[in-house]
Image 1 (cartoon, rainbow, N blue to C red):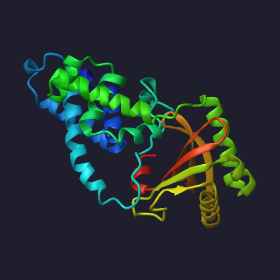
Image 2 (image 1 turned 180 degrees about the vertical axis):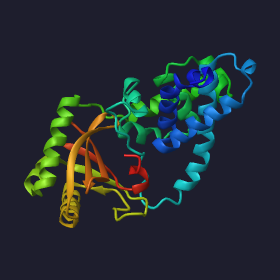
Image 3 (image 1 turned 120 degrees about the vertical axis):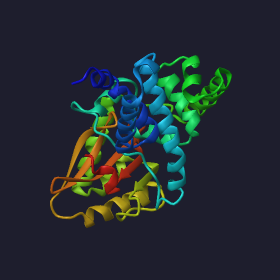
Length: 285
């Protein structure tokens, strides 16, 4: 491996972490990291004072440009748009994400409510601990403006985050019970596990049958789940895996991942369910 490549590779996990949080897509994040390498390779060494700031700047600006076109694309997206799930166990670029901060699906969905610039400033400051001077240089804004962007974004995130988050063990126990209820098709088990005002959001991207609007309420969600159970093809299996730093359900048909289900709980019941079924978002799994 060349010295240039070796210098780049030590920052790959960081660059992937920034890009994935910015874009909510592992495949697009990998594309941004690869493009950052090409630009790093094409830049004369004497123009790069320090490798890490250079690469962080390149990948952040690439992501900001990508988000501009992505927002336009999502206006025509069929049904709700959810981030692309990543497995956070084993030795993969995604595994490094959980060492920095929670990357739960709920957190990524919340980031979607920020403007691209707010998201960049918030992530660089809150998650990656960059100082305002460096952030201002990266996003090409004044320090004072970056402080305002961060303050506004942080308040929004704090206001929208759940007030209580159960421990990983409790979350896993609830997800295990949820899996058992789904596998057995137990109405009573589902009713007991789901909160009265539970919501179910499906992302099929218009490429697979999915609810095109969020379902709200225990009765609607239970009936929807029972319908899915009745229609599941032969050879369907359900397992628990670490997805985006939390226990989630992964459905496979003959070994191929077909649905990833993440959930939020209040420590006793499931309050929010997100099902990613768009095959384009599952191909990397």
